Length: 231
Image (cartoon, rainbow, N blue to C red; front, side):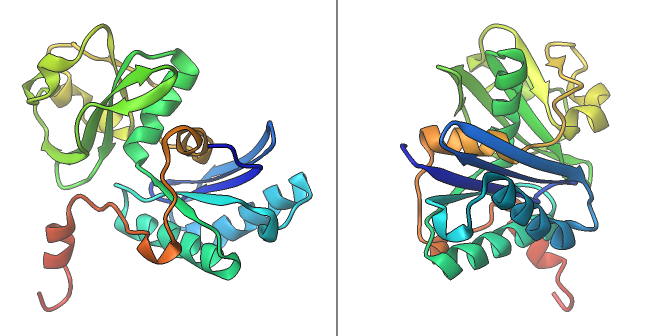
């Protein structure tokens, strides 16, 4: 996808991050501020726009991490993306946080096979497997919830090849349970997704949609519904 200016935002986990690519130059902002995303994200957007000396009117596409992750964080990211997109009629590309983690593992470690896992609380993880295809994360299974059992029990595990690395907070939180057989090489420096990886993945594989069609990827929709007051 050839675009002159692309803005990416993500607030779906503890990390709030923004990336802006104009031509071949990318500038980024990121901070772990789990309770301040709504206050920080627009400030980061203004900072990167100012650094690149452009305005929102110059943006060709907006990339957003749409989950899975924190319910509140996912909602903030999607809402901000829709607001920015509606205000300037910008197409939106949604990227999975799990794909972004795999992309980060590929960028930093040239990983060939990645299992991304995010701590979903309630003794579960959000998880999905990916392979490196020409430098980009390609899904080998859909994002889903998984219990805390050895990852080799997953139905897609036999299809994975080569050295398998683990990316995401799920491995840090539950490594003893998920990696009992030590079949996965856990990456300690790839724990939270970043907007810059979402941006690069979106440029290669993303499908733009109108802002009104952007939807969160909760994975655990039915649990969120049950937890609503009065349900």
